[in-house]
Length: 343
Image (cartoon, rainbow, N blue to C red; front, side, top):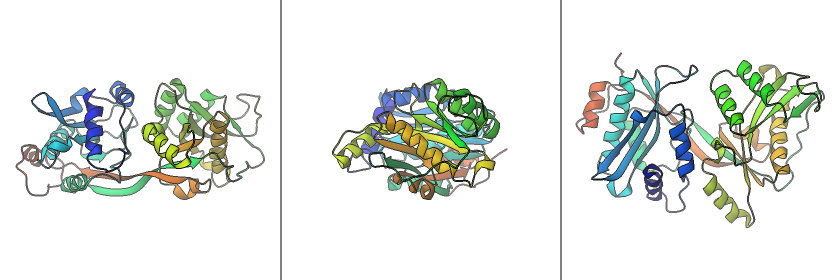
């Protein structure tokens, strides 16, 4: 597995401290086994037999994905080979391949079965220069959040007439298919099949009468050990290390997300109560720390004491003309791209 080794070496060259994004062989194998992986979009640059740069792209395979969007999921260059234009040229080869498959817009991160919602805040200057050269438009910052479960969480009682369930997985899937068809529906189905739990929020009904009330909200819950890694626990090894150093005690991580409410249930205070219920669920099962992945809602989760653990920058660009991309791939395009994709 040379890609994780290269990825980790690249990050070791960026930060003076511990690699903040350690890619494990297990997570990389999950990505290779994903329905969204296309081996023809996994490109490498070699110095002899040595892999010195890698770029991984994706195109739509599920009905919920926009047909004209492509993704750059991963890009890494060995530190000893940086500054030579290898990453730029390999990226241009990948963007050309995406354009040939019909993409007119490329997103950097935020792909299905993603590693990153966008370029991490800690990325080196070369990453931001490369993105600007490809004409990237930067969007909002996204965050992974951490909640310390050791102290008692702020009280967030459920309003009368509402309850939480942890034993109606099919009800959660049915709710998401109806209310959030698309990405969340696909992901939750896969997560449950891999052993994750889905907590449902219901109006009326009782905790011992499955199906007595229709779900009005859901929250995916991961305790670790599932056959699919929680998006919040992809970097779990370094999270564990960081939290162990700060608390000087034992750490057991859990993850939640995605989660959502029916529009009619919003504004009643039940959303935060559902998150608190999920936190209580994992704490009762031994978790000391909770990771909430990929969100802009720092104020909402901050009411439970959540703090920012990692920050990513959303980034996308209209694909440049294929002529410009091909010139870039050959190292012959010094000028900014013409940001008009070919039809």
